[in-house]
Amino acid sequence: MKLLILDRDGTINVPRDDFITTPEEWVPLHGAMEAIARLNHAGWKVVIATNQPAIGRGLLEMAALNAIHNRMNHTLAEVGARIEAVFICPHTPEDACRCRKPGPGLLEQIGQRFGVPLSQVPMAGDSVWDMDAAVAAGCQPHLLLTGNSEAYRHWGVPAHLPTGTQVHVDLAAFAQVLLGDT
Image (cartoon, rainbow, N blue to C red; front, side, top):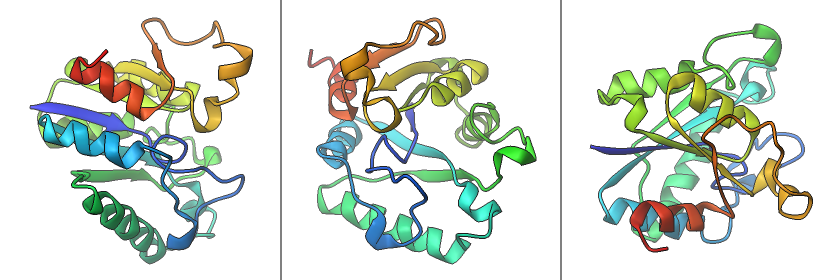
């Protein structure tokens, strides 16, 4: 099985300074839905691992998060794409849980659910925390220069990225590499 783990905010959708709390606030990044469709059509199963501390802070109910993900899934379906599952960490940083990225817990849950050794699974996200989680879980780390890391396009990529991290302009560029279109 070809399994791929993606972060959500800043990786496939436009991030906000606060939290996405309504379906209308969820806006896909340019080309991200089509990149997922291309990956799906090449046999990749795509799973999302996302921190959602707004739940733990009482700013977002599960019903609202489900509505946001329904919008995401509908938008993906419009271009012939799909997400296999969404794994969330509802905790705040103060909770110090294992499932909150940069911890490896969400990624480990995904590996267990799909029965795939994480060493064979690429993980792409827009933050150093995503890369730290990928390395801690044994995944292949891929930093996208979108969302939290968009500024690195101008400043240069930081030297403190985990060893082995590959850097891509965006999800479409990452998909090209996975599909051998480079």
